[in-house]
Image 1 (cartoon, rainbow, N blue to C red):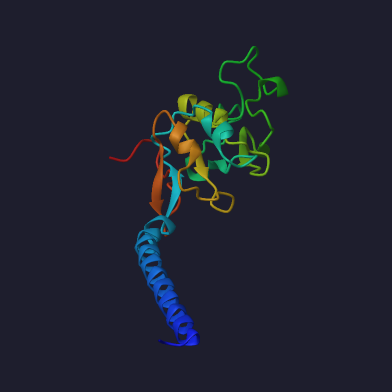
Image 2: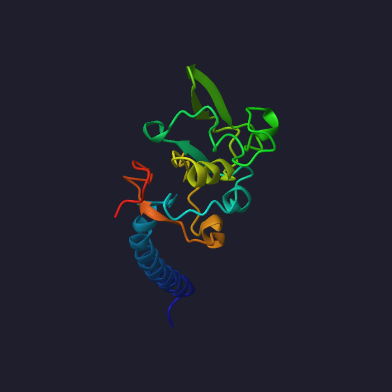
Amino acid sequence: MPDRDAIVSRRAAMGAGVRAAALLAAGGALGALASRAPARSQTRWQIDPWACTWCGQCATECVLAQSAVKCTQVFPLCGYCRLCTGFFDAQPHALDSGAENQLCPTNAIVRRHVEGQYYEYTINESACIGCGKCVKGCTLYGNGSFFLQINHALCVNCNQCTIASKCPSRAIGRVDREHPYLLKTTTSKPT
């Protein structure tokens, strides 16, 4: 009859072998998952500015307390208008530059006189909530130089973006990490 220490040693060796086999199997499963992971880590969520309908969901559906979606201004497209429809209500009570006519609920758009009848409009991203009111006004009544984009310095790149799942126009999708922003360069959608 084998001695007790030999039996315990064999059991320990067999237990270690079973644990090693389980770890190898788990490692293989993790390896298979890891082989899929680079596809996710190589992409980022982004808004197609041509598909966006300015619904306001970006301001309320992001998992962050303040949305990672921010308004972007393309200066070469901007008309530098005195009464910019991205800054002022396009159908105000009185056609003037009064504060009551401003669209942005958080004063995230900074208006600066350039010269004559020309004004520059810049976005204070820390105040922007991504509501899209300025984008809607600029696109419907102006030249479309305002549009929404997900700021990747803020975005946590959720596995399933909650804004994307609620977007009625399906304007949010994954883009290549090397080119994470979908920028407007013309006033009309490229063909």
